[in-house]
Image (cartoon, rainbow, N blue to C red; front, top):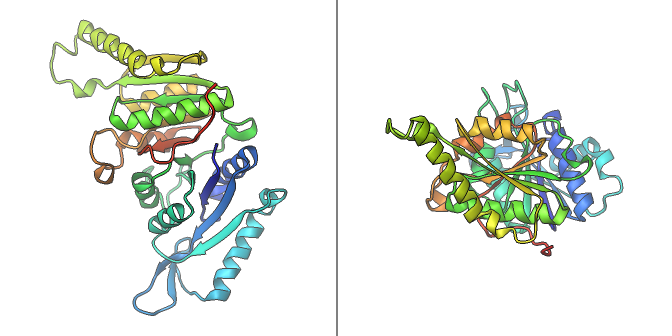
Length: 309
């Protein structure tokens, strides 16, 4: 289902949870895995000096130094590499987001795996609970789905089996739904269709009466069935639910209630050109708070292929 996976890592302990998911996915799906690390941002001109991403210090980069970093990655992930042949280790110099996107396109990968912000993390790519610049730019521009793992997760002890698809009914949500549907069918898992009615969007006092709220909930339930459930055919292991409140809060609560091991949603919340979309605040907040991995999907270009049940 995922023939090629790119795992972008700093090699730090903060990436251990994402590493476990990436390596387990490669084993379960027989994927070709690329382990990728960006050293840092190069200096001006022909200088070999690089500002190391992890330490923030200047280092003089040459072929020997790059090979030393690759050896360090082999040591860091020695246990995971055992029994998993064909893993490629790549080390590059440059702006991390650009290099991740470059190699993802060059290798034509089907999935990018990133480590998200761990709870209480105050340094590195992430500060004050806000998703960092690298993740923000990769999620926005990637042609393939992007899987973010922020916390220790049991997801791949048995594989993905309990999937929440959260939709805002945007055009991009259709691509996210196709991803969720394909994965749920392939693993014979459960699929939970979810929408949160965001009451803050309605300015009318009538819309915010109990009758107005109920009307919005009924309409959302109808759309969930019409736009998504109707596409599931003979796949019966699904539920659909509509709640009211702040979307990212309710998505995280719903996923915990359903004991989800994967959340799937579109990367943004507006029907605009893929290259002009902002990093959706709902996705950003879900990534920061979710207890399970989160997949964001912008485009239909690299959706997984699996035989229909």
